[in-house]
Image 1 (cartoon, one colour):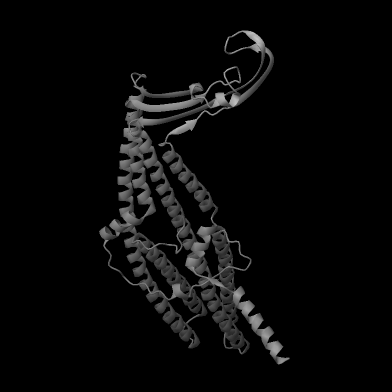
Image 2 (cartoon, helix red, strand yellow; image 1 turned 180 degrees about the vertical axis):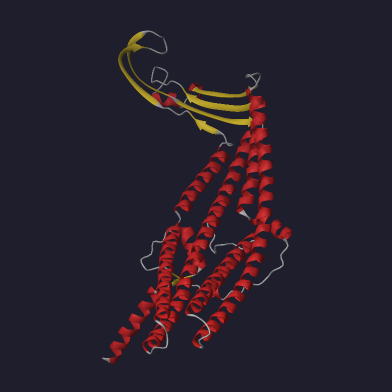
Length: 446
């Protein structure tokens, strides 16, 4: 009996552990990117780009078309195809077996440039997928940290509520013994109500932050979402010396948005080449085989006539199309393509400037939040000392309960500021690492 009880107990404990799984930041990001509806749409677009590459490649090989067979059976009075006179006939005819093939020998290399463009578009689509994943990862990361801040605010405020509750009980006893005036009791009760009110606000913020994180992640699991903050809260903000130039060089090699901008330059360049091809002659080669007319007349049986090579038509030739004049439309198209190409180059230079600015700003923000954390840490330490000193002064009759409550509120705000500085540091640290080439998500999404 004891053995069965032990087995049931272990099963219950194991089930409880499974239900209380805590999600790390990386797990939330990977899950959210995988479940994103935007990512699903982007993957479909990537499949279309793959089909475009296939179609562009197949367009370079000869085409085969026009096969339309037919068969007729004629009885009774009709026209003899040999003498072109009316007679009683019984014949069978087969036609429409026309096999035509054609290939473009030269068209200004437009077909090759279209294939190159399709391949670049395919690569661009993969980078757009990666860029979308990064955008989602940043949104999830911010929502995750907001939830962590809300949960830690509940912890800090809960400690404040417990502390003020003890102070209120102590004040109640001292008032009943006649050691404290009723006004002090009222002030302490107001302070307790204020702390409890702040705790409710923090709990509501936590609920909203959780809803927002689930929405961004497209969370579909049955269990409640609980986050793991053990590793994050162990991070100690420290100053770092980083070279913006080296980070910029790395970012331009790895950032999807920078690579997409380079792909756009190449695409517009290939488009310019393809547009210029319209100014050159087009040379094509074509050939065909046809089975025009067969019948079982006096010159042999039906199948013997089908096999007769004299009844098989063959063709072979070359075609050249030379553009002469079309209202300068082709020239205008080339000028537009050239303008688009130059515009893409300008956009890429703008992207370089914006990325460099973002890196400089991220490094400055990182150093700023490190200093803010150090000051918030000192503020929290001194606020705690001030609170302890104010409480001791009040117990000695040298201060008022209002002074104690004021220092208590200052301590609570200092803890909030310290927590916010820590979250800001983690966020900025992640962004700087991202510019250095460290991915935000652990899985590769294509």
